Length: 189
Image (cartoon, rainbow, N blue to C red):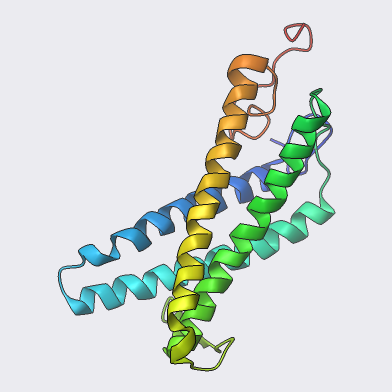
């Protein structure tokens, strides 16, 4: 498997960033929603610390992914109506923006509550805002609404990939899957 992307498919590094970040965001989102199921306050504190550490990891991976995306090539676009190409670009831009904004909003929320922020109990990170009880609810709401907006955009993204795979029978989805072969050029016609 090639590391860099070419004009036909995404490379192994781009695919790895894509799937690791997607799974981390979805898993951490579900984890965040389930924190109220903690059996006792100490368990909830530990789960919250883990949620924050995973969120910070997503932020770091997204920054690395952006750097790689700027340095790497990309497959050519599959033939499609102009509006679909524009919608795909807008969706990808929204995904990148939201995947960065979500952990930053969590960091902001953590900062305005005045709580310490550690990454897997290895080191502390500084606050990005001063403690401010007046902003606590706003920052929490921003974090939660950004998550749900990201979920909506992810559903549209996955739906479009499935539409390309099932109905258009092109390689849009196949070229991002970790395994599998692209369709033969003759098979597409």
